[in-house]
View (cartoon, rainbow over the protein chains, first blue to last red):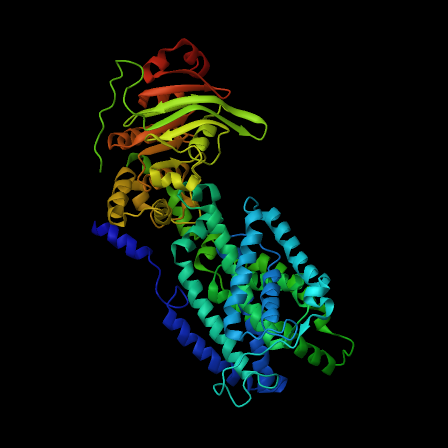
Length: 380
Length: 254
């Protein structure tokens, strides 16, 4: 039996942060990043692009997209279900908090419990969307989710009585932890509490996702992604497995939505269009589908390039006399280009998961091994 | 491991007596409007190898799919160990002891051999006996042990078939259903797969074997059923079917 034990341990993944999961290393990494990012922002050339406060504010906004990418990665990367309407859950989270804490409804439920409520409401809608699409795969699923993603903002837009239509809901309350974060606490002028908050949320989500990936459910997702029928033959309940992917993915978007609306203190339907779904998907694909930290890094990079990078490109173009160029107008053109290039040159993303890399670049050594003597096993 | 159930004596009556492990009674299945199974009744008794023969489109795979809950019959009754499993969802079949190696093998090609086998034990509660079963699978298929860290998709056809059977065995089935294990394999591999099938049966697993290779299948089976356009047209002990004039004409080339 020792031979078996040996092979089982060999198959176990190394317990390091970048290769596998270990909550402690995730926490340490998160703390390091949290401290380093604002410091880096004060160094040239970054200090020239904006004040530290601006940067930290931008990081907090980037965090929203990191959460979106992390959640979408569960649906697309883990379970292999292409979801093009992911922004809907983001919208649902945001409006949930708007209802829970604004003058519009008169309710004043604090931010922290609403964070959980927003996640749960979004998860419920994830299941509601998931249930009718269970029999759909690939393109068909993508079309239905695309439709759902379009319907939700339109509903928010046209239900004037309940959502204040195009003007959206304003005066949404801000989180408060009295006396813990700075003198001003959460507010428009002080991005730090938001920055810390989003980092904490992301860290917790990342830890949970690493756990999930290595769980029975995580394994079931991989099997489902590969072959639904075979997965069912293994005793995997494909219905609950799919619904859980939708629910968990949606709940993460719900968290992002609650945070987003509290930081902005208002929600309008036009913040949740197809471009949000598309951006999140592009982040997942560019970062490395299926790889948790890769997707987070991808989201951060894409967000910073989109906000700071394009702005600096404009400044540079203006400084060399190209006054009429505005790269921010070409944002989606550049996205498209980047995606096309990625698919051609590095389809597994910038930071691929090990499994995905294996899928796309089978190591030749293994192939040779098989090709060497296909009948070798016969004599055994 | 439950030990060898003595194989029923082929010389005596056509059907063994006792409680069947699996019983289908007048099962009708449809694909949309297409009436694919038109009243299938069959029994599989513990310890047997039973084969289901028939040409393309006769309903062999449909029968397996229906048994496994991947297709719900519109009429009829499926019993396993005396319990009605007609409407049981597919994933619960593993728990009651029905394992299958599906048509076209359907291994997880992007998982390693070992991960494929682990998927087989996905719904097992008795984790303690897992190692025993890995050992059993690797003993039956030494080739899989050699390639345990290799990707399923990089295996040869024969090895993939071994993996599909091994994966099904990891569910610890009482009834193992094999859907065309010989499909697309070289003759020498076909022989090997059939002989391993007999080994598995001798170790106490009942087998329901779907095959187009009638001669091979009847050679190892205790009993056989012949399907034609969704109906069972012949049944009996393997050797008797081999001798049957109609079967010879239709499936064995005269």
